[in-house]
Length: 104
Image 1 (cartoon, rainbow, N blue to C red):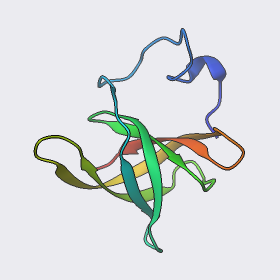
Image 2: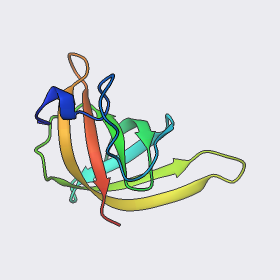
Image 3: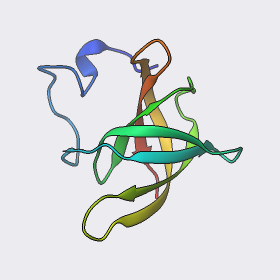
Image 4: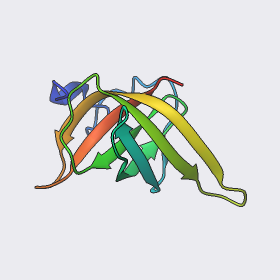
């Protein structure tokens, strides 16, 4: 679980410490905790360094995920990457906002 409300980059008024700017985007992402069956979540935002993924499963900080998703646009780009869970917090009763740092 991500610790410290003031250090949450998504908190209103929080100091921006991200290396890369975020772009608001909503696209489905297939992910697997290396490497059972894929599950599906939805991005909240994405950058060159990572994404915020809304998922239905609570997962431990440090878990490595295999990610596959398409970036929308005139020529959609298919992305396959590995990512590490850096933080996770409840969003609704059955979903979790999950900060993921891209490793590849």
